[in-house]
Length: 251
Image (tube, rainbow, N blue to C red; front, side, top):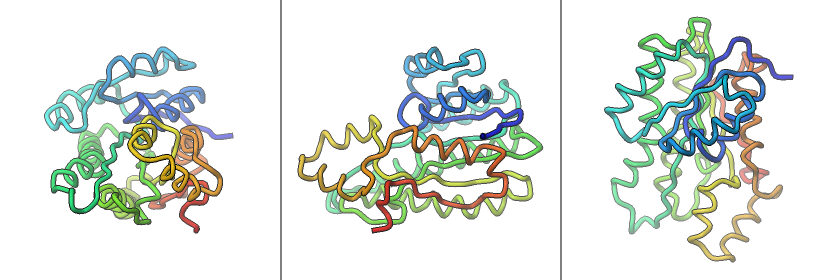
């Protein structure tokens, strides 16, 4: 059984998808959870449906808003006391062939997937708000970080950057007993997947599903791995990317 001794964990993207499932699971295991997201109504709905809502709180934050990220977000986190874990699962996707890609497409995905959450970690460590006893940081990557796919140039480059960041940051934070890992899923049944599939043909959907020998994943499949990497049982794991993709990347 996973154990979480006196843990308090921040979860970005907690209003839907994988982050939402991680929030539910961690809360059900008795972990003090702080839910982060842009949509106040969705976050409050998530909070009301938790098994132990009294052991959770919400912070409204847009990772694209640098002023909000620097000031209001950090103040809200500081007021919540020290924490032991951070899960970055907020995400976005851009699918365009190279002829239509613009520099701003790279900027958008790099900011959300790499630079904004890195700045959050950096600022939190300055305070310091991270527990002096150490903890765990989990970045949501993608199997696309190690594989190519047509139309995914901007997306794959940002997710590849996540894998590199995790390795180097893990080395720098090891002295503080802070572990850093990446969870890289394949296609998971989330609102993002629903939006993506609404724009492509049935034939394309069948082709993508065929790339996953075990079929598409569920948010809770990924949440289980995230929770393990936050738990006491993973105390000797850092700088690693875990592919959880139903067999996608082994073909």
